[in-house]
Length: 85
Image 1: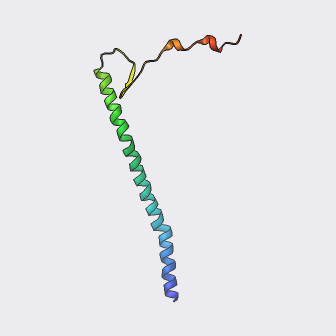
Image 2 (image 1 turned 90 degrees about the vertical axis):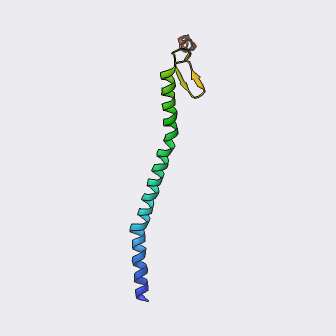
């Protein structure tokens, strides 16, 4: 009976100090790779945007993304709106 209790105690210690932290670190490595894989699509889009800007003739817009164009209007900002009377 004491021998079974001793083996159970030793297995419990091994599980607590070795197996659980090892499994936890393996899960952290898997999550890290998932985060790396989540950045791949944005890298592909960034490369595509750089290629499109290089091929662009310089007309139309300053910045672009897939299907979106942004042209900043500088005349929308009025300093008079913020001055106190």
